[in-house]
Image 1 (cartoon, rainbow, N blue to C red):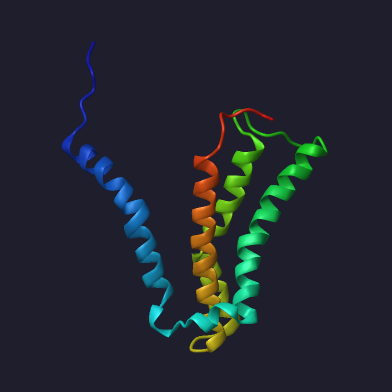
Image 2 (image 1 turned 90 degrees about the vertical axis):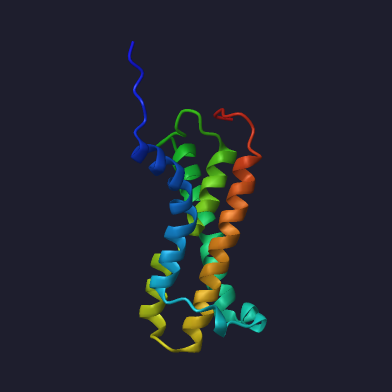
Length: 149
């Protein structure tokens, strides 16, 4: 039987895929969002707006995704997909806090350009995305074999 051979272009595409997805696209998104790292200070991390946005993204996304799914399963309206367990669902709910481009867009609309609150919100959004990604990866890497228990 004939074994399909990968063309040089397909080989190059497969080799570049991780770099594009995990480095180039996030850098492009940050650049297009107008994020500047020069205006941040450690004191900004404890300001009320920074904490509120961080907690809203990091905790709120978890509670929303995991909570709504758990309620639907417990109410009998839905069920976990085949091969999914509660730990995996929790890891995925952590990952929901990663999406920062829309949050940055909304912050720009809410606070306008050039304000201190916009810079604080950008810091909170980026921190929440990074913490969500790290926590989600740690939970998903440590997950046991899949079962609906």
